[in-house]
Image (cartoon, rainbow over all chains, first blue to last red):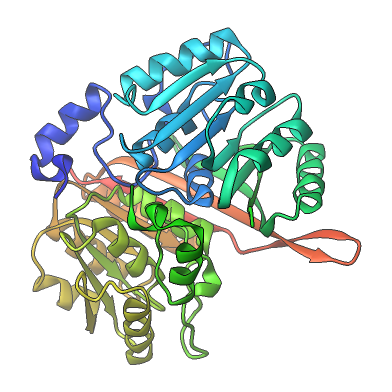
Length: 216
Length: 216
């Protein structure tokens, strides 16, 4: 039984308040992350969960999070790979690096995460081989996918979250060129319920295309 | 490092072929489950992953899967709670119980799962207290939600996957009546890419409303 379960309900609530995620499953509520006006909000819970699942992580996995933003995927990945693994969080924006740092500290995953400010293709050239590369955003997608192909171990996973249609198509093209296998395209539309006086109103979120594949 | 990661790429592929899910994260591809013409197909991968995440499972958690069908949620839950936990898979249909049994065996989670054929409210009355109840389907939703309320520990989680609008509304009503907290409604629309000669065609799947809440 994990610490969270064994310790009972009250401790679980208390740990959550101080920023611990006591569960084994991913899915930290969006509002639990520290946010900043200058950095895009966290990858939304449901999209984040699907992204992490497509990365197929193990305890001990090495992961790169390209364009870590607020660090929500970095934190979730770090919780999955545990202290036996490693997450390299890369962002070219200093403000994003700062917010990621704050969330990594809040969720107590400092020992698993290395945060690096810089351009992803350059930063990645200095990293060890990894089991998964998650690409949340990047100005130079083609170069990042090629860098990921270089750095991924055999059967390693790549996951690309595309907001733009153009990003999705470009990603698919590059993955095919590099002979990635098990290509999966999942377009996810989420609407969330908001309580209003007369019932539950569904508010649409922007669709995200989650593209994933395996390096063979 | 987990067995899957340590053992390297080839062993990972081999284990996958014999039905082992070597990853820590949920998200077994739909096609990996044994299916039957007489039982509805598995809860689709992306919905399954979101469902498991909303249940907020720990190693050692006790879980009930109401209307287990092919057993895809049962298997994913069992992999999360490990042998320290327990999953009670309930279905009133003997064919479903048979298919669940086959998938539980395929994914080597027999030591974690107890499969029970019967009406959920009656079966649940004989179970110990649990950490999460997942309701994939039930003819008697109201009774099942009340039974779940009885069986859930404090801070225990309930997750209801509704295909029908009526199910979603009925579930929300009951959860409110029983003073469940952190009510979350997430309507998930997934479209999956299929390769056709001229590109990638997006095929829509039916939207599912995932309702989750915490017992306080």
